[in-house]
Image 1 (cartoon, rainbow, N blue to C red):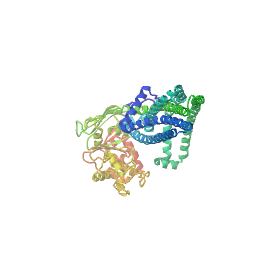
Image 2 (cartoon, one colour; image 1 turned 90 degrees about the vertical axis):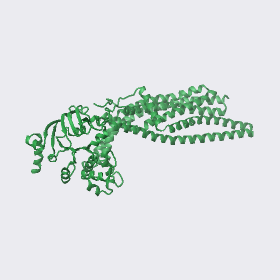
Image 3 (tube, rainbow, N blue to C red; image 1 turned 30 degrees about the vertical axis):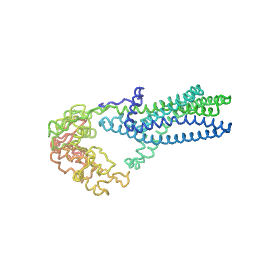
Image 4 (spheres, rainbow, N blue to C red; image 1 turned 120 degrees about the vertical axis):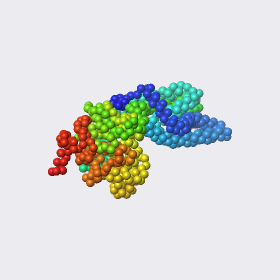
Length: 608
């Protein structure tokens, strides 16, 4: 296939080098996004890490001061104790402010980093070719990337801050413990290991479990859309599909939830056992501190400080190791993001804005094309010439290759063999904007943009603003002037019931706007219309077909209604991707071949 994508994403387990690279690239993104905000959070994180041990040390001095004041009865000792109260109050107040500030600034960072990552994903998707973005593996990668675009990169950054805070806290606690009971340092570190070992195992299990069931998640999301989407509502209600769809949704949830329960049950059981072990280690240290304090080794203030330091230290160890295991899980998902961002886009964009043979028009030269994974080609050895001012009709049964030919003619696909030329230049060498400026297309199915009428038409020029004259010309070409005049807001009317004061259109009305969009670019000298009248009434269809082409403009018209093609200069009948017949209407009817048989079949329906 023309694009590179992993053969299987569910088994994609990145190496440690890939994980470290992903972590570094995530840091680079945030450094580019808001370096000042990131530095401010880092400074406040260090302050937040130092204040709790400082508060414990002041608490020790306070308690010892209170005991001294009680024993001595001196005003100086009482005043000293009161000063320590004030100092402790200031420390705790500053700690409260710093923590609240960190919550606020991290929320800002979350939003801005999420936007930066989402923009990278959308920019990448915007550069994919049509064939590539249609590939199921690329679609799966996009779903994963969008699903974790905000949470996982932010989680990785925040856990970096958590690691910084835990390390600074541990350093300060270690310094205080070393002065009184150095062996408690080892006990503090040991107490955090059970939870760490469990979390490390759980992170890998969860990653493998949740990424392996991506197909089920896509199926669930699709079933939800069938029940909630207005486009499916008519058939769902008429055919009574709601109950069976909900039953499928329930069965899918039940199966997925059963797997959740089994995994979470194992985690709860093992996690509880490891948590009890960690608490037992802390309790042993606490009992020793109390025992030796009773024996006279420590003062009451020292005892309180040491117990607090041991608990804070164990929490810091848990936070440090938890940040490590959380980062391990986050970086697994973030690595998938960078697999997408690093995906080869499969082709380079051309740079030419004109061909070497001006006025030659569009040529297909022995063009062949096969969809990735398809057993047979969609087009085989197709050749024809479309000079300026020519009307070309394309006919054939469904699956004969008509729409594929349209995509090749618009430069959306590149042929596997042969060439598609415009003015003597291969379409792959044209700059995309210049090519789009030359070719106006109405695709089948076309997109109904849930935007304004103006946006629906101006989409044909990349949402460039059309002058009133140009807008009227495009609407007239699409037979949409009366439609727009009847709308409450004219061309500014929002076209969807999803929005307040929005208006929903019929299929034929949407098709008229799609035709207007194809005609938006007045400078386009090639117009490609794929089933432009399929949803139009007979009167509108006749009015459309009677409209003359602009001077020098050529037309490729695909239609199952062969009567629409009688005025074509040339008609091509496609069968199984090949040109089976070619000529004007009279010549093809005279041949008495496939085209004549199809035309007579349709004509008989009107005669009976």
